[in-house]
Image (cartoon, rainbow, N blue to C red; front, side, top):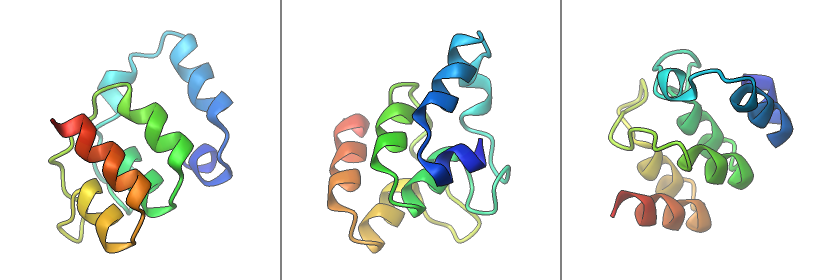
Length: 92
């Protein structure tokens, strides 16, 4: 999944979902990546398409990565305004 996020291959994400993997069980796993959850990694990479797709599966937005930042805080700190706004909308 990490390579899919890095390479912006949404099709890989959709294949996992369409293969009936219970995506909700893996979406919030922390420390699977050094950056934290899949959402943390996608935000860190500035991967708008993946962030958009991941938000459809209601990830926990309050989880913090190893540096103590939520995905929203990462987006803000990296000046990814569009991603920041997506996460804010989802959190309301």
